[in-house]
Image (cartoon, rainbow, N blue to C red; front, side, top):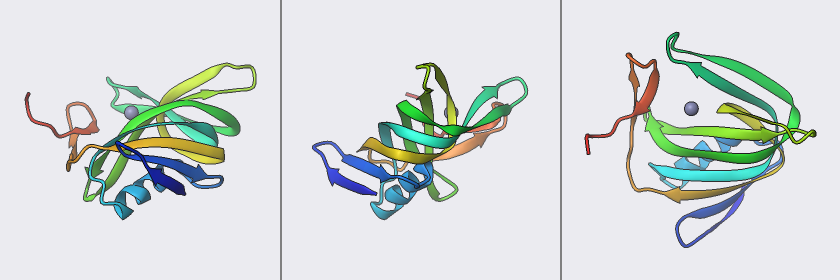
Length: 142
Ligand code: ZN
């Protein structure tokens, strides 16, 4: 990964072959980032997207081996079980300019991925909400 500081955070270039979410979590660890928002564009392959069925409390997961444009990724960094946790949703574009989208479980950088990451202070923790079936941001009433 390469990167530079910006006025509000970091501009990062994740390199071909890196697993995107792992690389971002490792960056958060190296730079003591406890909470952040992020957006990204680029190209990925071997992406795994998911759709959450609330009634069944499970994801339908789908692996996409081909290479796709990472048209848009948005997400955040929080803490879960003492480690950085990257929650991201992605829109992937194929050769017919069609799009697939969903919760991003993993993706390998195919060409490059350009990330704008903005630290938010924190820490912000995630905790499993048994009623929902996923780990939600643990935030107070506001
Ligand atoms: Zn999600």
